[in-house]
Length: 421
Image (cartoon, rainbow, N blue to C red):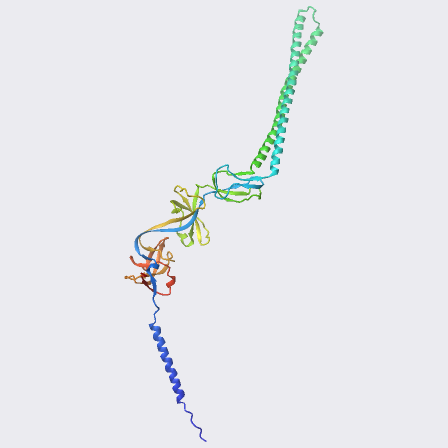
């Protein structure tokens, strides 16, 4: 039995139709891809900054903010243990040498000073009594010496008389009496010599004894001076004129000897501490000149130190001030500083565009001759300062460029400029 034939023509027609549609869509999309262009970005002239490329001399400068800081800082320390009774100054107070900074209390020091004073008074009284005693002893010794001398003179008179009578041989003086007188005279001579030596020895002994006692008195005197100095040190004073920068104590606080009570700075011995961005610090060297702006005056200085470390993206640069300080200068005063790095002669330069980096390639939008559009062009930068930057390649003198931040239209290569009014 024969089977009926299945007709395949409609299926082929559907397949051909699908293929035709795919070819048509592909063609349309291809044509669209070729002819599509991103729309131009429109900018208002009043909302952007435009600069012109110039030729001439350019100073390379770097800028940074900072403060005035004292060249040297003196810490005022406590010279004795004590409890803070009161604090007489605050940070920013101007003080003169001898002005009171704070007062401490220490009962032990006060008692020790008082007891040492009493001991010294007693030692001085004992020393005076010793001197009086020695004077009495010396007078007694001299009296005995004078008595012996008088006895010697008396026996010598008798000896000379008997000697004369004995020579006359008239029997008025016996030989025994004469010899007795002669022996007595020799005895008194020897006794006078002993008494004289005793007086001299007594003087030496008394002097040594007095010196030893005086040394004890002096020792107590020195001890009292030390005790009094430590007691007086409970009143902490400024050792020189200056400005108090910080106070590290408060009433009621117990502090040890040597504790740093306050920090004192010389108001007229200042330097400028500038914070220079890390990316610019490689251009800075010691010896370069700088201009410091206090917002009221400008003073000149010289770079004397560059900190080797980086803190929060900046490097500290110290500038010694060569001009007379203005009246407003004081520690911690906010300032601005400009450091002259170098001076370039006869170069192409332009106002520094946003995000432009020295010695690096970049892109800028260069305005057309009629100023209605701007096109992205590549450039190569040279040395840069805070305000200007050198153009090595990519731009000619008198070219005008947009220096504003171009992140908002970074997706396009062409922008159109319009006037709002």
